[in-house]
Image (cartoon, rainbow, N blue to C red; front, side, top):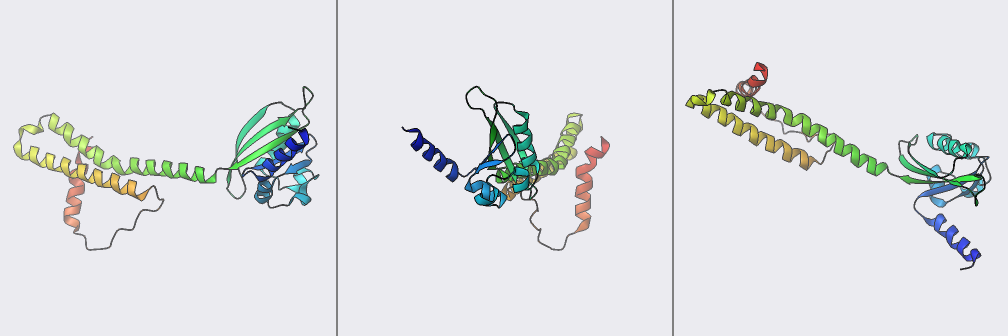
Length: 217
């Protein structure tokens, strides 16, 4: 295929890919910038082409990292996670441009917006933390009563039955907690509980009974 046609196809590909892409020379001058990069940095091609990157674009973690990379003159590539001033997370790939075996003459940067992926990861971390916190009390209560039974309390029928009932209640509570947390899908704000009258006496007795093994420890 003729080089001219290859160049046209390559230019068309770079111009229309979803990732932001731009290239600068060793002096920091912008030689090309595609549509996605123009949208990302809120500029147009005519404004920035031929301009120094620190004059054409806002100086931030990306522009500083890009300039440092091209100024270093190192060959090959580098990847870096960058958080923009508007809190968007970008995965940046820097690749040096070296014709043949000569010296580095510039660099290309490809930027992918991974903000949504980072939010999903943060939601998963939040969900795991909530699950860990919520299940701690029922698990501790179950463990405490089982240990007490193993130490000999199982020989008293009345105590055995009461402890097994508590273990059963706490197991059911644990199951409800897990189902509720999974259905919430890791939302940062828990669902509002319906308002109503609560009998405090039985509630306090249940809490005291369930936490007594932990208190003894």
